[in-house]
Length: 329
Ligand code: G3I
Image 1: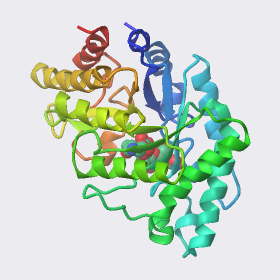
Image 2 (image 1 turned 180 degrees about the vertical axis):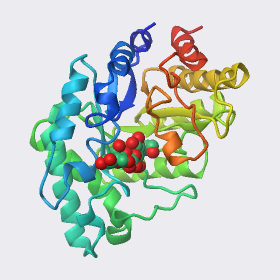
Image 3 (image 1 turned 120 degrees about the vertical axis):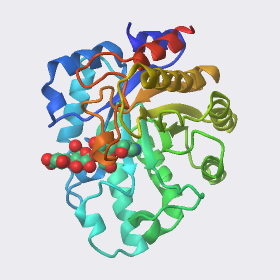
Image 4 (image 1 turned 90 degrees about the vertical axis):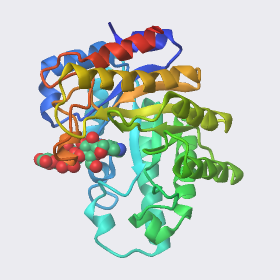
C-alpha cells in the first residue's frame, strides 16, 4: 500500500512526513529513503528551513540546507510544507543574545521573513508563519518576539509574509499558524480561533491552521472532539491540516501486540477525523515515520515507539490502521 495514493483517492492533497534532511544519517539511508519515496507525497523539513540554519548571522543568509532538502524531496515530486518563520526555538545567537528595541527586532523579523519566503518562493505549498505561540491557558508564550514586540509580532509576521509573497507574485503560497494542543476543544484552540479572527479584521491573510497532533497512546482526543475542533476552524474560513502526527508511548513496552493495537486505534481516530470533515482538511503529515529517527526519545527520556514503522523499518499495526482509515474500512 502507498499511503499517499490512498489519501489522494480521498481528496486529500497528500499523506506526508517530516524528514530531517540533509546532513543527517537518514540522508544517505537507502532503506529509509525508499520508504519515504513510496509512501509520502509531502515532506516537511524538520530543521533545514529554521531560523538558526537560514540566517546564522544577522542578514547573512544560508539556504544551502533548505535547497538540498527541496532537491531530495523533489526527486519523487513531493510537495513541501515549509517550516517555519517565527518561533521561540532554534533561533540564531544574534537574535537571543542581546536586548533589542521593538523597532529593531521588528525589522530583523521582517528581513528574515522577506528573504526566506522570497528565496523559496513557489516551491512551498505553505509556510508555517508563526509556530507554537500560545500557552495552554491561552496567553502568549514567552519568546524574544513576544517579550520585545508584544502581541503585534503575531499580526506583523503574517503581514510581512503576505506582502513578501505578493512582491514576487507567489500569492498561492498558503500562510499557516501551526501549534500543538489545539486538536481538541478548549481554551487554547478557541484562543487560536480568536487570533485568526483578529488577523482577518486587520485585513491580513491567513489560510490555514496546522494541528500538530503529538499524542500519547491511550490519551488521544476522541474522534468527536477532533472533528468538532477541525470544523470550528473550517467554519471560520480556514483550511486545516494534521501537520506533525505521532503517538508515543509514555513508558515501555512499545512493541507488545496489546499496546500496538491501542496505538493503531489512536492513529486511525486521528486520520479519520481529517477525512470526516471533508476536503478542507487537506492532509495528514506524520512527524517522522520510523522509530529510529523520531525526535521523541531525545526529548522525553524513556518515551518512544511513536511512529508508523519500528526501528528496523517494519510497518507496525499503526501503519495498517492508517491505510484502513484512508481506504474507508
Ligand atoms: O545541528 C546539530 C548538529 O550540528 C549536532 O551535531 C547534533 C548533535 O545532537 O545536533 C544538531 O541539532 C539538533 C537538530 O534537531 C538537528 O538535527 C538539535 O540538537 C535538536 O534539538 C533538534 O531537534 C529538533 C527539534 O524540533 C528542536 O526543537 C527536531 O529534530 C525536530 O523534529 C523538532 O521539530 C519540532 C517542530 O519544529 C515544531 N513542533 C514540535 C516538533 C518536535 O519537537
